[in-house]
Image: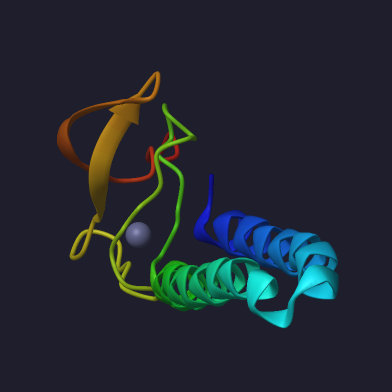
Length: 113
Ligand SMILES: [Zn+2]
């Protein structure tokens, strides 16, 4: 689950806590406090996930992201715009079938001359 989805789930949980606090509060205003406290906690957790989601998006925007020519699910993690043929190769953790198989550097396959 991504940080953005966790943040949305916490928002929904906070809303549910407020809604379920309404009925006890009709009996006595203090009975609504536990629900409001859980809503406040969920909103704090949600804010933390939102910050994490923004950091993930900023990191993704800064990396090259070129796919490996044999393993397209493996993306280059070097900074965007780094690639210069024969000088700065694409690089990143080599992930095959969802498992990291060490680091790998790779160049695009050369066209037949
Ligand atoms: Zn690259």
